[in-house]
Image (cartoon, rainbow, N blue to C red; front, side, top):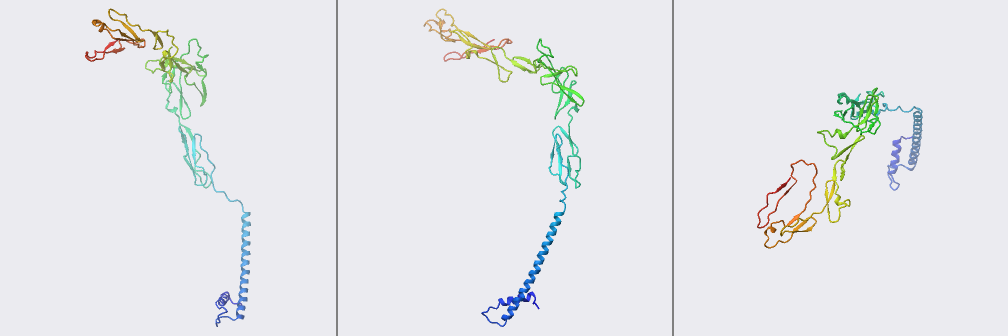
Length: 375
């Protein structure tokens, strides 16, 4: 009879607890110990056999499970909904289309959303609503065009096609048109072919900036807008400082001779010919710049009378010669005469103050005289 496992282990432990160097009545004899060892070896062998059988059985079951899984079909995909795209003239927010995921929609400025602003993916693979679209907001519904103008819808805006004689963003202004003398309206640069488009089965035509539509439907032409006449009317701001010249689709500012156009293209500035080698003043004369030109001058001292005489000390100044001791009239004459030139525009309305003169006080002399005006 093979002792059970606990007893065999007890014997082994008892052996370990009884070293040969110590004699004890509790220790097994040699024969008993050998018998216990053989019994323990048989026990371990049996346990090893049963363990190996368990391992083989586990391997067999794992192999069968692997084979079963390999033969099974592919995994069922996670439930999802069809992909959605952003509507024309709009945006889409959300890139996952799995169950319970949401997708949101918005429209660009000038458009309104038609349909749901958001949809949710259902377990059956469908969305909670149809994909929305963006519809153009009708700017023409308020009839913004005046004086018989035709409203045409555009991208985020509208445009008024004005009838003959009207201009402006809403056809609110009277348009004055003209072409140069001797030119034919339809055969010159002052007329262009219109740009036409089919809008809801109706043809709408428009012109480039600076032109307006003229003529009956089907035979219309883009005629130049004469900005010079339009803004030359009383009460309207002037386009140019001097001369406005109408050009096809626009205008140009011109300055008179002796002036140059400034960077703004509208203002004029006098050209100082005296500061450049353009003037040809003869020797002994001085160049004086005037508006739009120049003059060559040679100031002369006044003729002397009695004991008074003058001498020229500079191109623009004369000095009185010394007076005799007993000549009182000579001392009352101006000691210095200076020449000054003032450039004035023509066609000034009178009366107008051109300049003022005054004398300064000196020690021992009366105060300054009242300024004298020259008109």
